[in-house]
Amino acid sequence: MLPDWISLDCAAPSESHRQAAMARQAQLTKPLGALGRLEEVAVELAALQATDHPGADRAPVVLFAGDHGIAAQGVSAYPPEVTVQMLRNFAGGGAAIAVLARHLNCPLEVVDVGTLASDAVPGVVADKTRRGTRDFSVAQALTPEEVAFACDAGRRALARQADHQPQLVIFGEMGIGNTTSAAAIAAALLSCAPVDIVGSGTGLDADGRATKAAVLVAALARHG
Image (cartoon, rainbow, N blue to C red):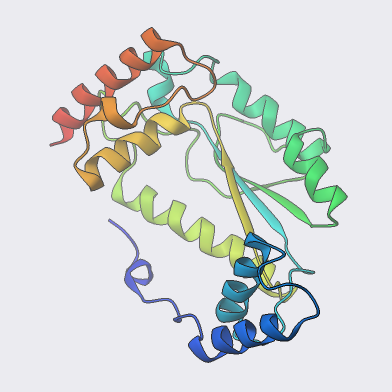
């Protein structure tokens, strides 16, 4: 179902650069630990970037948007139409992430990997094979070929950013029904009871969360 490259190992963080960054922290003119968590982040970033002097000056934001057929089961406080509305809001610069990216001078790319939008949205990269997934409580959400295409869409998005030599890439996602799909995957991979991991999403109350969990229990049983 998944492309072969999914199982390839990523390069391991550089231990030598981690140690060098820790040593540099001890030499700076400040009390040890004065910057709190920022110091840990700087050290880990040095290891990931394999450099003594890590940076995040080039940090594009890539946001993926898609619709989830499971929304038909009433698992979200908002209707599926909101996804496309937000897609336009992202591209228009009005959404919170768009404002933050602009403030931090981070390029923002919005990718439609499967929303219900039938027409191209200005300022949005369209890279999808279908408009929304199927409702996985009654059918297979995506075919193996569609899953592979979606994974490769992420790889293509990263390849587009590589030309700008980013030091860090920030990923995000949006789509009505997304937390239900995420909870289903987590429950399957971690062997958790859905009731233990489902959240409120966009603002469900206790009854809404119970409905969401019940939908997941039935859907997971269906797919084995």
